[in-house]
Image 1 (cartoon, rainbow, N blue to C red):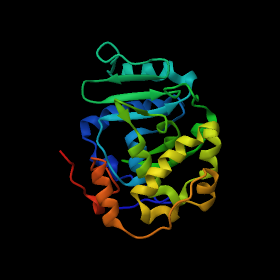
Image 2: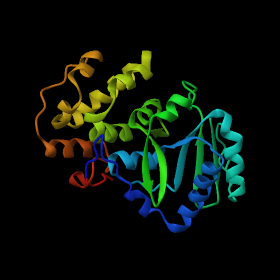
Image 3: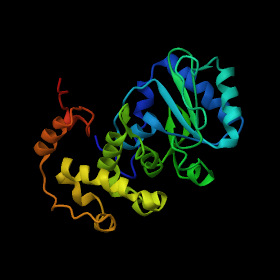
Length: 251
């Protein structure tokens, strides 16, 4: 299933276990009651824009720095505890709490401190109906931007970016994304070089002006899902582009 810039998939809400949703619901209701602005990120946002669900038992929320203590209190009132003692993390940019089954993560800054969540960031959302709740979900550009920097031995978020570009490329606000990146635009160029190699049939979904801006001369687009399938297996993953690319994982 493909999801473009105008269609949003909210069926992922029904895939969350009831006992897990009840925890998330307490936090979401509490934030709404206190007027705390937020935008869903992570797996929830990626699923909304791509139609692909990855159950992580984790709800990520972008929040303003000034609201972090209020969000921490909400997690405590919901019976969650900071996971720091068990799994130490950098608390300068995020807070993570768990009930032993799910994790709620509040993010107010990029991991590398490149940017802080602000009013403009939280204004760029789409409102979606998930299990009767109207929830703000971050737009793809605000998801791609921080994920570009997650490229290290323990974790790489570039597969998420490639999926977002695959499903949302025609509807992305490329100018906005480029303006966010500034001097870091070569990171986006790196992802798009991989995208061109992986999905030669999707090259023309990205505006020619973007390729030119990044100094990349893509080959002419041609339809070849079999080639995409083969190249995806070379990357040792099955997390690509929906049922039509239901790829086996290489041992």
